[in-house]
Length: 233
Ligand code: SAH
Image 1 (cartoon, rainbow, N blue to C red):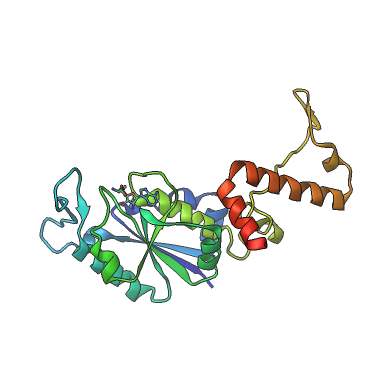
Image 2 (image 1 turned 90 degrees about the horizontal axis):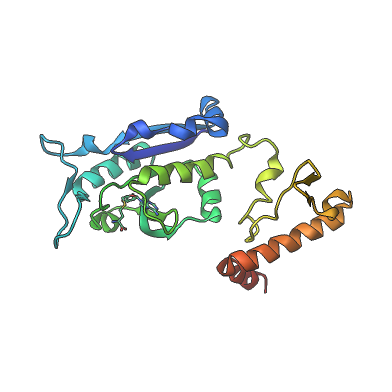
């Protein structure tokens, strides 16, 4: 089954972009996923093909019009009724690896990319659109956020990654950061690979990795660590 990605954007030429290269690019060529773009401007209603207008209440920038967005979302829902529509916005729910796994197990995803100051808020009341943020940063548009989200989904699709196990041990999959990695040479600039990793003792290696995953999560990501402990207790 092909995972269907539909991107609603003012800049369709940005796709597949980086997703046309490496693992995702090969998977696209192999039909593991498909990449369709929808030009939001095609749904503008006037002869100037206007998609935005000034913000109510004043202020800088322009806001994407609700009527144009709704027509584009309706089209996506008609084309891909089994795919959720996600809008990229810093006001959305922060994306998680859990949600990425759910999405990648489904039929696909339609992604609405904002520009300028973002969307007329009423689109979220009027249509079944999930507001998603890719982190506490502000991008100039939703397209790089969409690329990031799709990349995370695509690598989980069956057959995309080399070893089937390599997805399972990754950061966040167990609610922890992953343990650190090393590779040859054993000594580099006076620094050696931890002894235990060279011991060949698989139980000891597993215990060390678990310990480092826990220690690093506690030190680097206190919030993640609290959630992990909460889920375990
Ligand atoms: N005025 C908005 C930011 C607009 S940035 C605010 O302050 O909330 C322009 C567009 O970039 C947004 O509509 C959104 O589609 C995208 N974007 C910016 N940052 C993002 C983020 N962290 N996650 C997802 N999309 C983002």
